Image 1 (tube, one colour):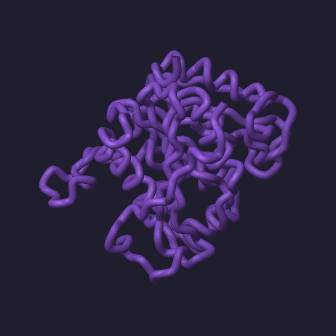
Image 2 (cartoon, rainbow, N blue to C red; image 1 turned 90 degrees about the vertical axis):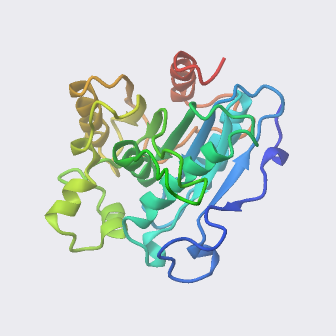
Length: 276
């Protein structure tokens, strides 16, 4: 059984400081923390974006997900991205998520990872960040002197857990204000309403939410699923009746009895050749 010792030291995404950093404290230094599999690694990797309303980062949606996926052979990297509560606004968060995927690809050989099996996972506001990268990726800068920046930021798949998706009618106002400020122009609200940004190039997704979620209405997930369907992007959609917002796996390590979404997600990940 895997232990917590598999967590490695966090790694700054930019060795010389993040672009547009407001200072040099830990709040200004986005990092990745690798979680390595003991012996059953499949070669797939997951960048994990914890939720927290773009105000803080919830450990049970980062550390716990990583330990759980490790059990099933997925090498994980938990992202500490910059936050609105520390003075940051879009595009700092997206830049951090894009850099994370690029970084994992650039270091694929170091971690015995397949650079073509790098997913992104996020919950709540972290789900919004994941969905933003799923719809706003680029192919990398082939002329960059930085090997990381030469990599594509396009994830190979996405896992969105009770995600914030829209900046419109069904927006989570706290996440929206932390991401964009209180008087964001309409064009920026549209740009970051990710259900409006899906294209046929958006990667396949696993989506789940609950009927009882009063914090981030289920319409967020349904709008994204509808957009994926219209663009012929494969997805798995689960709406569970019971459960409030932010429940994560609803279990702790070693995850003997996680919420059923975990099993549904593993079934889907197997179909994507991420787990065996």
